[in-house]
Structure formats: C-alpha cells, structure tokens
Length: 315
Image 1 (cartoon, rainbow, N blue to C red):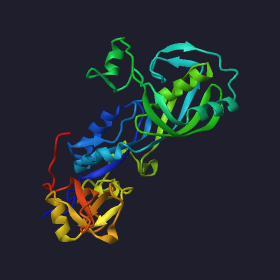
Image 2: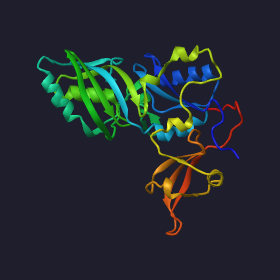
Image 3: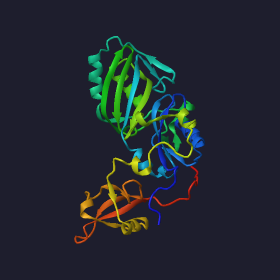
Image 4: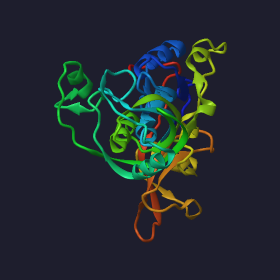
C-alpha cells in the first residue's frame, strides 16, 4: 500500500513575486513552467506588492488550510499627506493633508496604538465577498457598501526609517490583515492621511525570502525533472512528527485510528505529521483520547495516498 508522496510535482514552491502581476498571473506562469495544472497558493499578494508567494503544486494543494493561516511579515513604505481610494499608490487621490507636525516620536506612539489585537474594516478594493460578489467588482462600478470590521492581530509594527513624507516600516501580522488599510488608518490617526507606497512580503509562516526563487529563474531553470521547493513533509516543519510502523500506517491509510505509543505521546488535540521514515508524509492526524486502558489514539485528518506518476489535475 502507498506510504508517501511519490510524485515529483508534489511540492511547495516559494516564488519572489514581481510587482505589476496578480498572484493568479504568477500561478498561470508557474503552471506552464512546471507543466502541472494543479497549482494553488497560500495567500495572495496585491499586484503592486512583491516578495514571498507560496505556491502549492500537485497534492501540496491539500496543505492549503495549514499554510494560509500562518502569520505574515512585510517591509513597506507609507506616504504621509495623501489618501487614495484604494489605500495604495495605484488609486486616485481623494484628499491631502499637512504632515509637517508628524515626528518620529508621534509615529512610534501611533505604531504602538496599532500593535496587538485590532478590528479592521476591509477595503472596498479587496476579494472579500458581499452577497457572493467580491468587493472589488462593486468598487469598479463606483459602488461602496458598508463592511463589517474583522479581528486581526499585529504582533509587531516597527519604524525603520522616516524621511517625510515617506515612512518605512516592518509589520508582522495575522492572516487577513490588510497592510494598506493599516497605512490608511495610521494616516487618519495622525490627522494628515496616508497611503501605502510600496510593500514587500519577507515571510509567510516558515517560508522566507531566502528560499524564494525569482519567477524568471523558475521559468528558465535547466533541470526540468527536479522541481525546487519543499516536499509535503518538509513544508509542515512546524507540526510535530510521529513515525509509525507498517501496521499503524495501514490503519491510518484506511482511515482508521492507530494507537499512539507512549514514547510518541503528544497532548490531546495536537496535529502531527504521520511518516514511515522521517522524510515522507503519509498523513496528518490528530491526537485523541481513547479508553483509559488504551492510552492515546491518532485519528487521521488528511491522508495522502498514491497517485500515478506524472498525473496532472485541474486547479
């Protein structure tokens, strides 16, 4: 019975997204470059933004829910004194304000106010849906609707440089945080308005710029059979690993729970990577309570069975 990912196209590939392209554009180009139709991503970037874009090829698309929830890190530049209808440099100017009284001390105080758990109203130019339609479609028609504030977390907001009207910053935040909205809200609090001038994602979860490949290099790579990126097992490095026996693996692959040995015990509710060898991924399972005499069980959450070599799929 199959134990692991065997297909060379099951990879998590980190691309250094260039400016001026949508995340979907990048997906399409990588799809052609690696000849794999089944490609997804673990969180989009706005067209003007650059940096870490995590792509999921083959069965790696089944890891999406575990990777998209990771926190993100960005470096960017906000521009004081000018507000736009998109909250970034691509929009039309809606107002201007005097920023002459903004100092580094005021900026640091303002940044402190935007650190922690916040409620953020998504911008109109976003993929958030209203009655089944993305807000950006309504925005293109000149329609603006009320949006409910959503909880986000800004773990760190650091001032990197101040050369008025430009403010350089670093932010570490939760999934779903709109950095351009953060820039606009900072401008509002300062009383002069602001928009996001540029943005570069430097990290998404465990994936950083150090392993990001320029799109052009990925498209022109010489060794076609060997894809860059991480295997399914390595892509979930922040999830603990449990090595099982042949019999236990058979139980997991059949969708049945397996007894967890005391040496491999983890707290109840913990997600673990199930592996036969500490290299390949067989399944993702959850530690659950069994009967008092049976100890703990591993209950499969997602099983990775064998697929024919070279098989492709629709996205």
